[in-house]
Length: 219
Image 1: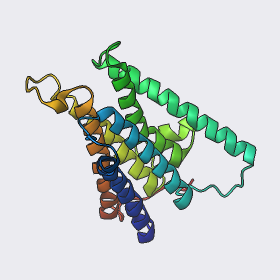
Image 2: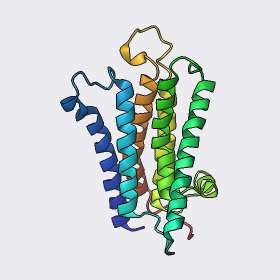
Image 3: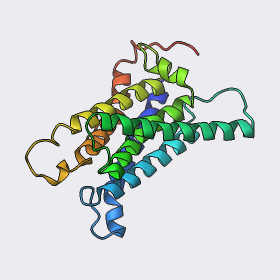
Image 4: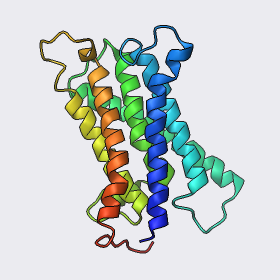
């Protein structure tokens, strides 16, 4: 396993972490009263857009899974449209799952959907950037020993950390503490964000630590 590839992964992940930090800091200079808690829905939109944009840019620059075949412009347009459809379907699916787990069905529908968009940004967008709109590849990566590159191993870790972070973030909501961060879906979205950030940091470190044991099958 090449050390240079691990360093590229680390640099890309740290850029994503830095972008999330900036989404909580920079808007306050241009928007009076902006805070992650006080204007949480706005922050959800800003964070989702920034992470999604940076993920796409990093994918285009680093090309972690570059195919040796040249594709036509029509194929690229078709692939882009499929990715958009997959992302929208992911948002709907996450929204439905969140409601099934106890989120309000009618009330706070905007909050729930924006939280679903954030989760899709942390998970589905990363899958689309690395694997493309290929369900079989997604199933392969998230099966046992299915990763074929360090980027796919990182994808596994960040996705799992994001989902578990959102799940753990729901625990404080029913507690009678009357804290502002207990308002739906603040604790869940913060939990997902912290989980995603933790996954971004843990992934390259774990891969580097286990680089001698990790063997990837050829495509």
